Length: 324
Image (cartoon, rainbow, N blue to C red; front, side):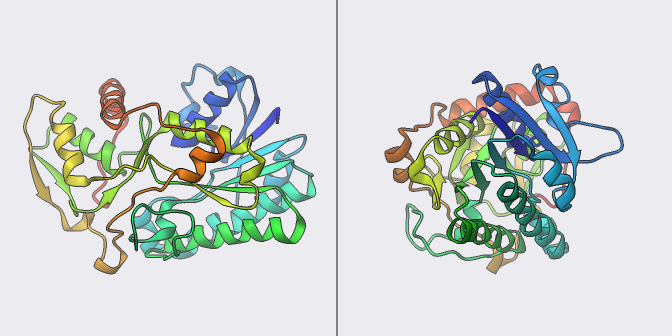
């Protein structure tokens, strides 16, 4: 596993994974969406920019995906549409990117004899927890078009393992946070509002709980799963077996600021009742047993690091009224 391709490698998690693997002395190629400015997103100002090969194309286009995979040993497939609110507006876009895009990666990987493909899933596939913590045997329940597209992509990937013997591994992260995350996500959204001039912090539903992993710990899980044969043809959860509500996150972030701001409930930020995932809490025993992985960054420390980074880079954040 020397030559690595990361689809979606200019994004939040992908850019961190690219840098992490470079530090481990892998040859890293990033595949991300073509743009006329040749912009590399989160890698644009990376200290490793000169060491990363970036190919801009479109995961929905088989030819551009196929041409990027030559002489690649391992594919980390992260390219996806991820914003849940936009999936209500354009479900078809999620099918084309998340399902058809995954097909292109799987088929090109098969045709080019790639050693293994690690496909990125989501804890949203489980829907609201039927029991806690959520293990890999929990039922799947798509409560948004985004979740439905990811479930479909996961099953398509696993079918390639069963049908063609492709070395497929599904990594199913629960919520991730850290520097570079879009202000559409709840943690950077709250932080950016504390850093802004707004008098209130606009939030939708304050009661759902999530299980958060700091982004560098997730990168470590990616590498460990890729090195473990026992994860082939299966789903592996990544999370900290820890849950916290959005209200508790708001309180924790506020404790890091001198300024006090009140919560304001914004209707546009709320999911529809049947679409809201109320509770996610990861059972990570499989991951720990097979890889000896453990999270090195405590949640409070991760919040502190994220705030420090956002203070230094606050000009790049824009508020999004449709954040959930």
